[in-house]
Image (cartoon, rainbow, N blue to C red; front, side, top):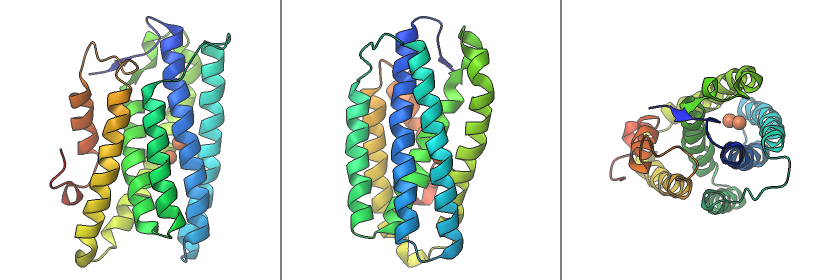
Length: 214
Ligand SMILES: [Fe+2]
Ligand SMILES: [Fe+2]
């Protein structure tokens, strides 16, 4: 199924871009802090680069939301509140130096949710679509590389660490599900359901880490 963007209400699309803006800022700030708590030089470089890219993404979505809702329409939604809880969970792992938890939370789960959201946008159905299409392609390429980093990192972890990583994954997955549940009015659920969205998110995540999740 494809999410319908812009065919009905500019405000509704602006809310989606506003939500993505929040997500990009979480990614920007988290990646910057990952660079500070990571000992590996190459990984630190990647985190710094990712943070710079997320900063650009945040600026793009902020501009897009402003274009679509220039008259300060209310853009706050339950999904943004749920994203705030997600951020606090990442902050907790960052504060305790739990780098593995932050990679699960950002590069694996949140990037999976972001990639899914981008893939379900159908900009061709929006009168503003042509303006956003080149940016959407750029974002997809960069988000893919962020998610791929997380998957490569995971492959290098020991078998013994899998149960703890799976527990982290379950926590972040449940928080991501709360974002989806809170975004029901954003995602065009007239043509699908939150459970459909959750099922698709699950397919973006490593199967070994998802046993026991809903
Ligand atoms: Fe991003
Ligand atoms: Fe990203």
